[in-house]
Image (tube, rainbow, N blue to C red; front, side, top):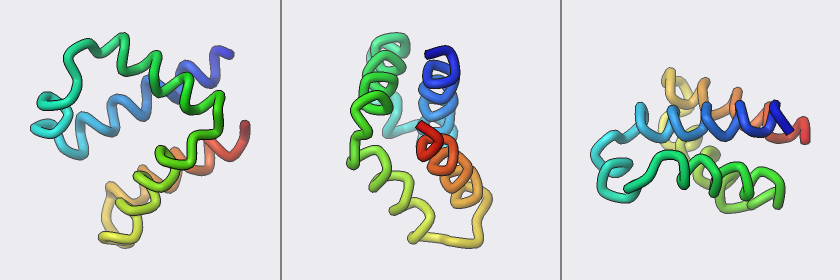
Length: 78
């Protein structure tokens, strides 16, 4: 459980770093957002994986793509 929660926090941080304006427009409560991400990880939510894959596909040689890929690898461990 702790690894999934750590991953949820890391995805939340990545989302903020990737697009802080969109993050601030859509996230009112960070703890609630992390809890939602945690639930998505536990449910193997395809939308979360698709979002990360779209970041990779959009610019495969970017630092963001490398971070997104690392998150996908961690999610696949569950």
